[in-house]
Length: 291
Image (cartoon, rainbow, N blue to C red; front, side):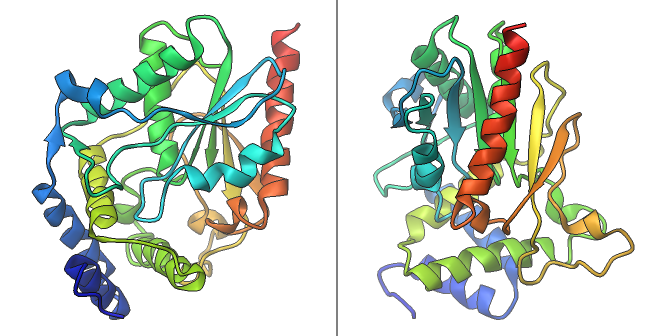
């Protein structure tokens, strides 16, 4: 339904309804330039504090980064965090932008330095931890891990939950359906759960897409586990010569594990199996660390 309070959302929904997802994505990218920005010297004033989701005595803490879509936020990890209650500390690190009063970062370096310093302040120089990211949050997690290692701070592991690289929509064989499936799935969820979205959340999504444009992951010392959803979203092309073409992929060395659910449900009704996959991998890292 059109909402005169959110004209951008109305236009976005109309474009999506006619299947014009590249145009919808371009619309919010252009509109994001109307948002105010903060620079590197101001980042301390705009950082959002990490939220603790679970507490426990496990050696490795977990630091999670949400996706950067219009419906993203710390809530994505609520069920996963609860799964680790009593086992280990789990934190989620929000990104600014979803509140209308928020400013967006002016550059990728500003954004990554902000999150890198948040992790260092949270865990110090010694406490071991793993980083988790889902969807585009996997790009955030990888980029922060790279920056931490560049500063000499070890990362025990990196978990990517159905994450695709930034250039997926341009990849041969994926461009004709990737945006349609991902953005269509987001809108399906908005309608199914009557989720709140707004012009500010859409321009945040467009702004972060612009900030990460051109970013590519580089190999890191930390082991990487890529969890791939085993169920395609509506609109994903699966009748290819290689069935894996539609699945999440990552262009640097990593271990792969398929988990039940689609891109969204892996952290919804399928959270228990996703949590078990993360738990088993972290337990293996801890055993290796203990010799």
